[in-house]
Image 1 (cartoon, protein in one colour):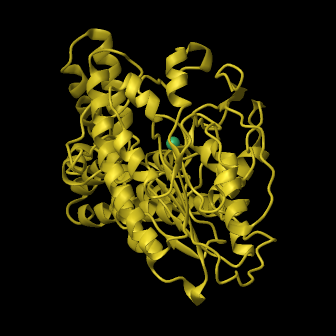
Image 2 (cartoon, rainbow, N blue to C red):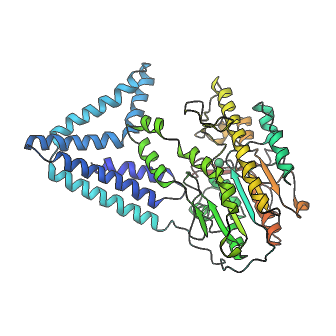
Length: 491
Ligand SMILES: [Zn+2]
């Protein structure tokens, strides 16, 4: 019973590793599990002695089955692959559940159940409390607000996750993104047509932009680097403290990914939808997963869509004290799942809405879905820009991807097993700069770490040097080795 509650909860919190833990989210999910266990206990504890025994066993089994459902279905899939009989994939989890029910009905007993459930819940809450304590990023020492000059321009830093570079879209996806680039150029942007990301994965790429310097050096990833990454992702180092120290109000738009979350140094945090995320994450762990998927949109996609739709209003709302504002906004778009049609209506989740490593017939359909979602994102971006620029004609804007799409990328494979064009796609990304009066510092082959330094220089009249434009490959989970690809990519 303890395992039924503890393991999935810890699994869930560690699943975000090396990203930020969400103690509030974890506590909400733990409380839901606890209320479920105790509620079931209360409901079934009335009645005859044998019925109590039976229902406590039932509670145990239901808890196990409910919160270990992904493990059961994986077991079913493994058997099904082995035997080549599709129906086995569904029969195995049901058989496991019935078997457990039968065993539990013979083992159930009220006092041990209540004791174990109580202890397990206490441990969960204590562990989550202890873990979350050290994970709130402290405000930076250099964060001593002063008043920015009246003429200081508002700054908007937008990360569009996995946005492909135009030449790659044209060449490999058969899509000409020229119309969008022209829309940007007519609004004062320069397109970095040879832009490459500093890393192939979000946590390393985005933390490095915000840190104004490389977070992960080549070689084995260290704990110190992961700590630095979390600090940077929550806005406690680099770019955001720099603007705060210059008298800017800092705003940060979160998303449903575990990494891009406001730390305590942020003045105005536009939160992700915690209720939506809790429902979705819990739902995916249970037998109700297909029902939740049918009834609710995937928050990974849907929350970013609604935040992007609200971007124009957010960045034109008045800042406290009439200060200029620096806004950091990370959207998980046009990243998969590709649930948006070109006109921004929604499509159902299916196996073509996510990436896969294979190059079979699905690839063309998947790439087409990515293109459709990109067209929708383009329109929402232009709408937000028009709202922002009408209010702030001198506004500084950087719109950049954190890496390319990865339509043929199997993230579980080591670097040496990845095809050259898989890596190439991942290491080419959109980057567009609007830096009124600072156009001289622009280069076609800027990487985001230098882009972040340039917009800081432009807004604050600082003189941060350009760093070497380097491209690294890091593992999906931030646990492995970082490899320098710069020479290989021709940088
Ligand atoms: Zn990303």
